[in-house]
Each structure stands twice: as C-alpha cells, then as structure tokens.
Length: 195
Image (cartoon, rainbow, N blue to C red; front, side):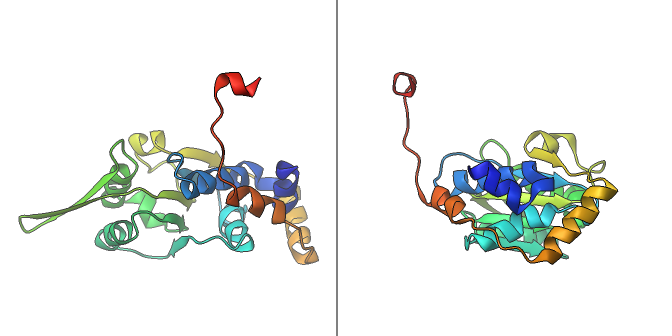
C-alpha cells in the first residue's frame, strides 16, 4: 500500500522516492546511515523525489542549494551534525575535490569531519544522513560512490510529457499513511518472531 502511494506521488522516480523515505526513516529513528545520490539530467524529478515528498509530509530537513565554499559545507555539517541534509543541484559539491573530501569524511566509517587551518584542527562526528541530487557523475571519486546508494534517473520523452501533465493536473494525493509510517518506530524482530 505504501509503495502504491509513493508511486502515485512520483511514479517515474519511484526508486529515488522510496530511497528518500528509507533514508529519512532510518535517520529519524536512529537505525543506520543510509546516504543517497540521485543522478540525472535536469527536469527528471530528482528534487521532487525528496524535497517535495518531505515537504508534503511536513518533515524537517536542511536544504542546501546553490554555491557553498568548502568551509561553509564543513560548518553546516558541524553545526547541524545530527540533521537530515538534501544537497540539491549544488554541482560544485560533486565536481570539486575539496568538497568530495569533506563528503568522504562525513560518510566514512567513523564519520568524523575535520577542518585544518593555521596549525589548528577542528573536528566533529557527523551523525546525520544526506541526499545529494546532481547532474554530474563522471567527476565523482570512486570512494565517494562506494559510500552512497546511487539512483540513476533517466526518463523518456513520453515519460517527461506525462510527468508534466500529472504535475499540472493539480491532483492531490493522500499521503497520510506514509506519514504514519515515518512516525512509528520499528520494533525489533528476532528470526524466530518473524515466522
């Protein structure tokens, strides 16, 4: 039932939409780190898959778009280290080695981010989750790709036209069941309890 609702919400980017929900749920309930990269050309629905879904669900997150310096990225991850981030169309973040180095640390095994300047070192453990929406893939370092779940969004011309028609129809979709799912913390099952 939940997948059906998510498909109604954004049928052409279902993997991105589902992974957004899984990542957000795992962050909200402190289960594990699931960080995502949504990759595809402009207009495919990457942002809609996560930004519009979380807004519709009225869930808190930090949205970063446009230009950041490496120091600003570090400061954001340090100051809001337990937050859920969405980096949307911040292409410099995925084409610059300096930015990717910060992401590598934030998404590493110990998730410690560091900033070194003038013989001083500042560090913080990043405990949040993040989603990166980008149009660039070839410039991303292999170790960074290994630390993210990657969704590739490629719509045909017909799918794009249909998507535009759906958006312009103004049809409202009841997603309260999805919100209920996010609010309920999972119970841990042992293998014997599953049967």
